[in-house]
Length: 181
Image (cartoon, rainbow, N blue to C red):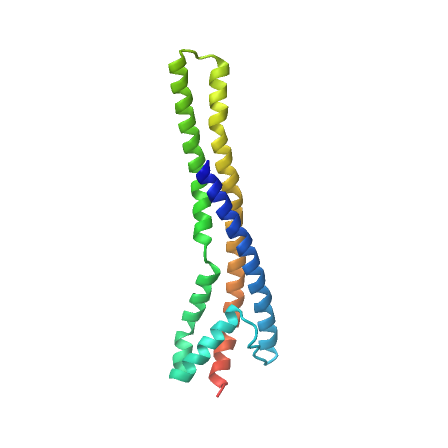
């Protein structure tokens, strides 16, 4: 139960953090795209798209526009990695929490049956009390796993949409780097 409590707290921490981070990224990327399409480069907006552009400009200064174009995807992959940070932990929690709950249930049933053998009584009261106590860990495991799995799928979709929007603007960034001198 202590392990499940820890996993629950950690998964809720990730869920809240992802909500705040992705909300901020979506807002700043929208502002960046709006300004970029007007022909402005909003330097003060710290977002994944701006990071990609800055990386491209740095590469262009050092090695030229063609080199920057060929290696700009590295910046995109770096930003993708930052957006997907802790998603593996959330998926792992969603996967192992029910198993930990089941382990607790089986362990509790084992102890219950050992108690029945030691007491020499197999009355319904003794069996039912042990079984109901053992099932608490299964319920706890599911209560941890369901929000983690739901959050994982929800945030996976949001991250995909953010990355898709970034990919859509990628050719425009390359064109900007080629014509900027």
